[in-house]
Amino acid sequence: MAVHSLTVKKILSMVRQVFPNAPETYVMALINDAIVESGKYKTKIEYAKADAVEDQMWYTLSDTNAGIEVNKVMRVDLKDSSGDYIRIPRLLDNEVLKMDVT
Image 1 (spheres, helix red, strand yellow):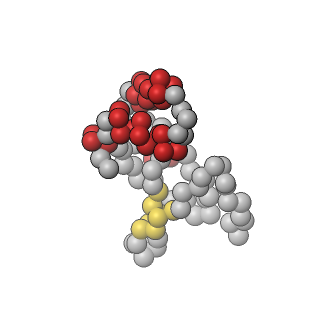
Image 2 (cartoon, helix red, strand yellow):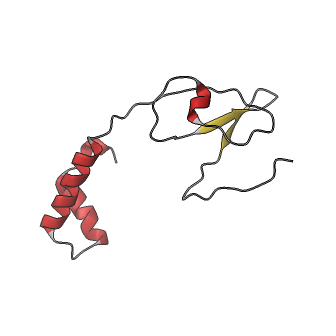
Image 3 (cartoon, one colour):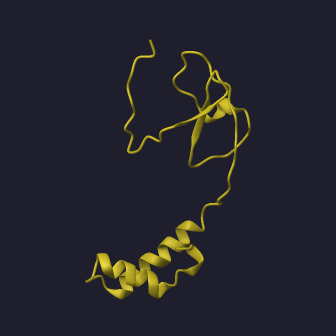
């Protein structure tokens, strides 16, 4: 469903499916708060490249030297020695994989 086709009535109906006893005024207040919150952030897409260093596990966004502002990383790919790009799995909920490089 495209975002632009959502109406307040449709959103209210979806919320009611999950929370059938939620008061309409409360749900409307949540919708209004979400609209205000989403308007606080500029959405823009940036691309950057960084050189990989042998045996280095962690990189910061400043390693790209691209001068970009990022508040969310959507995807990371690594170029292997044969020139193919490998997508790095996204870690959720601070589930950092701890392993030895050697």
